[in-house]
Amino acid sequence: MTNEGQRDGDSSGGELGNDRALHDQRAAHYEAHWSRLRDEMAPAFAAGLPLDQLLARHEALNDSRYQGFIAPQIARYLGRLDQRAFAGVAAPDRLVVAEGRYQARPRADQFAVLSAAVSGLADPQVDCIVEFGAGLGVNLGRLAQVLAPLGIHPTYVACEPAAGGRDFAARLFAGGEHRFEAHEFDYLAPEFGFLGRFRRILAFTCHSIEQVSVLGPAFHDGLLRLPLAGGLHLEPVGWQRFTNVAAAVAEAHRSNQALQWYRREYEYVLEDDRVVENAAAWAAASLYNTDLLAQVGRLTDAGRIGLAALAFEIVGENPFNPSTLIAWRPGG
Ligand SMILES: C[S@@+](CC[C@H](N)C(=O)[O-])C[C@H]1O[C@@H](n2cnc3c(N)ncnc32)[C@H](O)[C@@H]1O
Image (cartoon, rainbow, N blue to C red; front, top):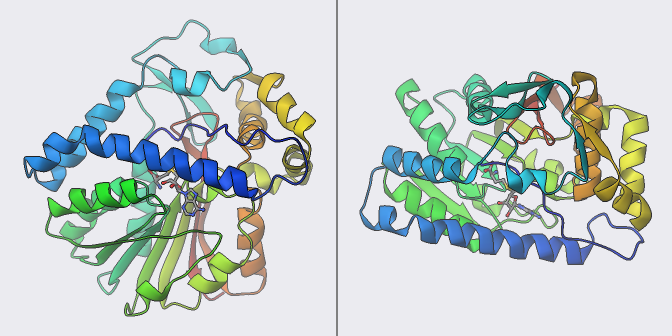
């Protein structure tokens, strides 16, 4: 999916991080959005198509929604844009980020990055692959297709607050032979009891921690009490490594004036040396996550996890919200 921004959460000011109204608006948005996509797929589900055909059908529908060099569902959030060398470039090319640079390509393959990283952490003893904030469960479905031929046959677990997403995921997996479960989950009140029976768990997130302004320590602390093979985040948090950039984003979470400046005045310039700054502006304007890198740093410093991979702004389906890959194993 194109991880377009959520721009609800206009505020009269004050501390916006984890604002309850923002949380509720996002929950309502995803409940409606995922239910709509489930209903759109209803004929394919009813026909009892196999998993690969369901995934292909979903991807075709997704593709049909992406029109132009920069999709309107992204462009409408860009207050000001200077396209520089990309002025006049048109579809079927799309503006993407690949390995930290703006590129014009037919598509950005976010799943290829996710799949390679998960395959690198997985082994045949892994009995559970869980995605938190799993949305429609499409990442899990596609991973099942990649991992089964490698002799890896875990239970796939979709953790997702929106019932429409969990329902879609269950119908998707009904077309395959993989073990599957869906559970309600909220990063702000993380519960892991349903994972208690597994012996070797691989956990990942993909553009879902982004939705939580302040994650805090509870999510990783709870996760690390489980028997983990590894963990992985594909999240738009690379800008958090620069303290000056992070301070400017934090200001937008505190001050409505700063927030509105990012939403209306900030100029996105399509130069490679602006990828990080533009990503920070997108995160500020969207009130996205501000502390995932700090949480990972806390755990590496304490020797509770060791990094297996770290690649900043490695891929961007939404070029203004590019993903950073963080893969880790428990222990130092
Ligand atoms: C941009 S979508 C990404 C979905 C999926 N991971 C993917 O890559 O297609 C963000 C997801 O995060 C979920 N989410 C939002 N707030 C959350 C929260 N507090 N706890 C857990 N998931 C949340 C949303 O319901 C939504 O499914």
